[in-house]
Image 1 (cartoon, one colour):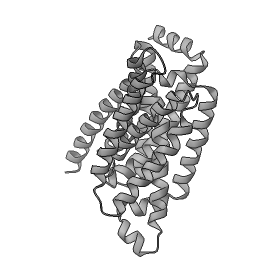
Image 2 (tube, helix red, strand yellow):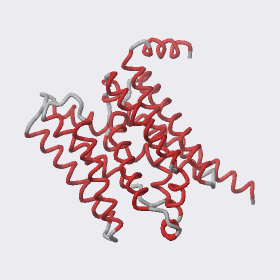
Image 3 (tube, rainbow, N blue to C red):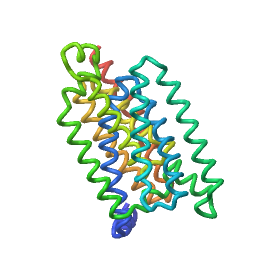
Length: 283
């Protein structure tokens, strides 16, 4: 145990490792807050669809030779998130649209990376983008500051509009009837989701973002019953999984994204067992 601690302390002397932990914690907090709302609104698959859109946009940014790929990925993902929201409001099949956009963006991104390769090792580039194997360890100080600013914005929006988000999460029709402008708040949620997805790509890659958003919420719901408790628990679980996953990844030299997701899965089964015990105790 002492050797592992010393090894971790040695790695933490490097700025890029500290950046990884900072961004990992920030993204985990933001993703967990939105995860509870998405799961309860039965719209959790949107994170997966938007992550593939972000992958396609980042492929275009890589071809264009942009250092900061968020310049293209962020606005494109936000626009698609709004499009999906509007489609759902018009009673069209939101799941079908998400599936179509998801597969199309993923295929287009991979095709463009093959036609216009930005490096000699396309397979490594694709694997990194999809699974986040090294992206989190290549963050610059500028990207960390951008992540910090966007994370603070998301947290402020969530806290300020907490009551409205709570209302439209559980009964959107009633909220509309009482005068709440649900369209504006749904639009805000869609934009926040898009921002979280782009930020999370650096942590777990585009294919694993849904796990980062959904697993903490599902785990917390096994034990807690009210919205506030689930949200707080989800945030704590998400941060713990990200930190433990990053530490395990550093110590055992495993890919960051998959390692974090495996920790999320383990935590889910622990909470699932705890929930069963809790229900039996109540009975």
